[in-house]
Image (cartoon, rainbow, N blue to C red):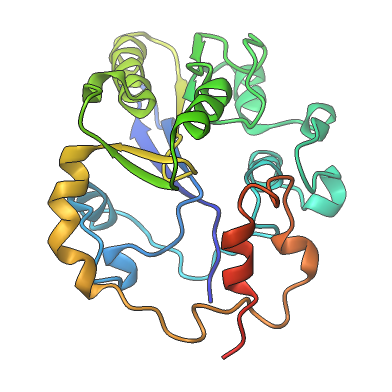
Length: 252
């Protein structure tokens, strides 16, 4: 069983006047490899399929801990959690060099939108060109207050008001601005979904409604890997998502 709390895309964009490359960095929170190009037939992800057809796919890219913050710290620093000291929601990456800052020191312009770091800041040493996180943490907490299940298709709110739509819109505008400049650049965009709460526009739920019969889990997929340490499945949200934790403890 592969558990990846975030799937990442690095896209190298050739620079017009140099053999160096610009970088587009895309990260999805809590997205496991349950996608069509990983063999999951029930998933309808045409844009990801298009990207995957032009990409190198890694089938053995494992996370150390199935919690968003330590995984992000590990990815951004290139260090293991037992080195960064992040097992939950600490700020420990601050004493380590993360790659956006390394790029700034190397002369790149950098921009970040959405949830790239777990604790976002407007630090110009990290995001030298622009940064906007949409106050995603408070937005996520707000969703949990009025939703009575982990998945809620929304018929009322326009798609443009969802944070991921906002992140994308701002990232595209910044990409066009940076691309027209003479500087090397790196742009990061982090999407909130599929992190809980799974608050989505109804039309996307409706597109997948008739595909649910294709989704069946094996006994192995329903059980935690027996060799995984307990810390891999521990999170400060244990009490909130207790019903989900109990499912993983079932014996077959």
